Image 1 (spheres, chains in turn cyan, yellow):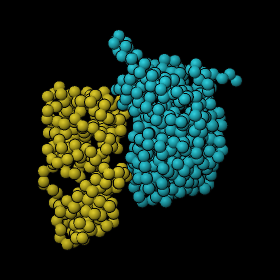
Image 2 (cartoon, chains in turn yellow, orange):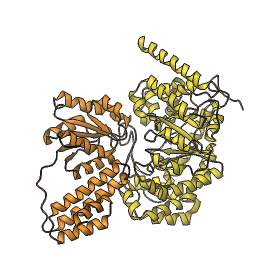
Image 3 (cartoon, rainbow over the protein chains, first blue to last red):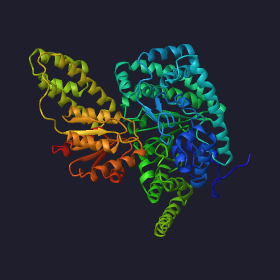
Image 4 (cartoon, each protein chain N blue to C red):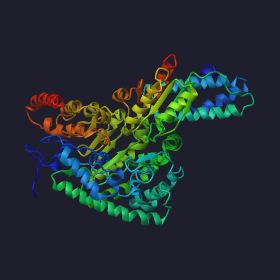
Length: 421
Length: 214
């Protein structure tokens, strides 16, 4: 197979580069992985509704970003072609563009109780009875409660499963097109971790009470779903041809729960799942939203050289490098407000620092703090993506060279603003 | 340690059973319900301080709110309960900006402000600039708090502050921003007076803006 290089100085393909950073080896340069979806709609002049309901428009919008702002190494896919499929990953009530919201709105998730307190016992039982198939009935029940037009039972299964299959087939085609252009794909599937799924499905207020009143049930229910998670992740990653998963951890940060609650209720099932996945050759990207400063030590227990910790800004990414850098790859974290309201030179300066400090010795992926905001300034997005080619090459003279490039880029920006570009 | 000190400590330690037992004993001993509320409020301040110092987390704030509500139910059920007639420290209008329907952060700030002695006018989510204006006018609030979780809210934040400017209310009303999407850069962009991602800072700002101690 032809080895396509994205930039003339590259000596690795995007897939080789990504594998190198995850396994904590030094690649030829830092890879870039912008988390683009809503932004693509705005950039291409279409609505979010069109982005997610018309596959051709989604493809054209992402292609436009790639052509005008890229190239970049790693495709970060978020493309639910059917709203209910979204709930197969995040069990929450959703307000959907084009259905409940104007077509150009972003999707918004509501803190409503789709999981009941007694469902912990049901989930434990489900794990015992359904074993490796338990993920599917758990989420089917949540889907039927999150969407008014669906009822619990076989009708929901009949509605969701064909749509899920179509969605996966579409993703597989998208992945192939990205690989053909020389990029690679971050993951083959993207579940929310069990503990975090319970938090989303119960609603924060109820879940906090649960953590106080029924901690043992939460831990057992999360553990009971581990076989189900493992099975579906192995299956879908094999179907997608990408041996990596993204595990969302929206509710395990120190913003929501104490390190003690994390240690006792969230981490055990996460660790069990990650260890099994890694043992079967699947690497894990942990999507760590919020502040994780006090959970970082615990993450060291995960298998070394097989995980990525993605941070979105509140976590001190420079501290994360010190604590975790010898155990896992780090990804992030250009702040969303900088991408929207800052200037290209500010973005460039911050990315340069990320590459110098967090990228030191490898083990770093350039990314935004979570997603690229829909209203980000395209010039800022471009500056972020381009920074890896500007400063990200590894070599003995790297630091001196990148500082010289930075000075040159600053002059270039001054000239651009001076000529009114 | 006397009962009052024990109550403050139990509230600060989030020991619900002990709090409720102490409140029951104090009611039986004829202690004024308003005095009991004051002790619980002092305990709530301890919770707030521990949250600021990262000893407690969001979950601790939510649990303290639960305990306070249970205390209020006990007190309201007692024969000698009379609602407080004391003046609030000030009035605060709260809401999420137009286009943003997330309300967890706003609700927690509302709870903190309420138990810290402020009267809160909660406008809910996706609030138009004109609604913030109208509420500030009708309530006479000196502080408006806006909680934003998405970057699409930046423009509505700026429009809201601009609406207060246009109507000549900016000198009388301080505007504070909160939520995961705000920062110093956003505060400057919107023209607001203060910002924080930390819910307990909202109380500090409100005290400062209404002329009290921070």
